[in-house]
Length: 115
Image 1 (cartoon, one colour):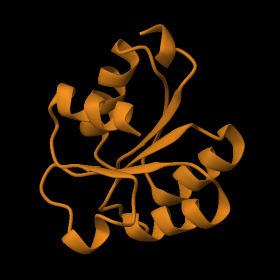
Image 2 (cartoon, helix red, strand yellow):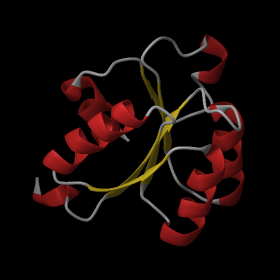
Image 3 (cartoon, helix red, strand yellow):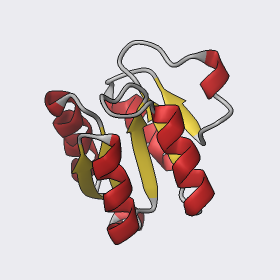
């Protein structure tokens, strides 16, 4: 747990209960967590906070997750892990540093730790 204490993860999800659940898992595992509910808010947060990792929902109301991922990769050297509770299109798998199609705590933490 001590190795994660300094790791900062930005959780981006427009579904507030899911965002809070993911954040809860990460906080309990010892990560520093911030949250954003839109693509615009996530990019602003990355600009000011520079997290170590972005946990990014694929479907956001104001911009598709693939566009956010591309923007993050073009502007900063920050890993991105796509998340979804349903499915992540195969064509997006190589774009991010990881993908999680699960709300299971162990799956989520394994994907974050792998990056």
